Image 1: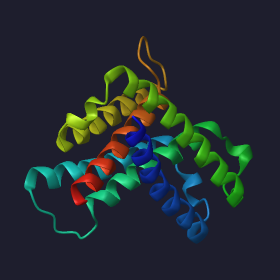
Image 2: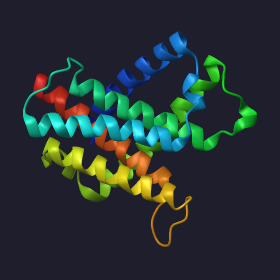
Image 3: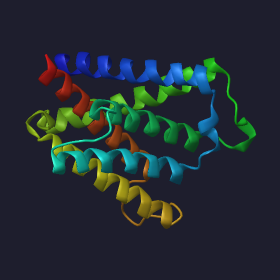
Length: 181
């Protein structure tokens, strides 16, 4: 588990670095997006990954690794959006964005640690295509919950699904890094 935590933190550091650099370039323009739009952005990235996996080739140079980073960062944006409201404004100070991102990633890591304990790191034996499919399934669940205006009968809400998606994408980054090493 210690190896996983180290690899997890390294993957998150890469995502946070890009997120914060883009924040310096663009500010928090993403604050204009509704949670459903962020869900669709995650869907687009996961669908591209699946398409490339199925075709065995890609025509656009953007890397699969970059798509997983995008999934993680869009997930963080969605979780932040769920916490904030219009009174918080569209443009947030850099320090607040950094703090919110860190808090959401810590909660996501806590969920991973708990699930990893119970499931015994089963993700390490999973195929990359299964991680992609699980991400897509969770996205479809979120879309259904959004279409139901957040109402569920017995299911976890969107927050848990976003966190699961982010964790699957972090696992994918770990696996990509292990393969490259």
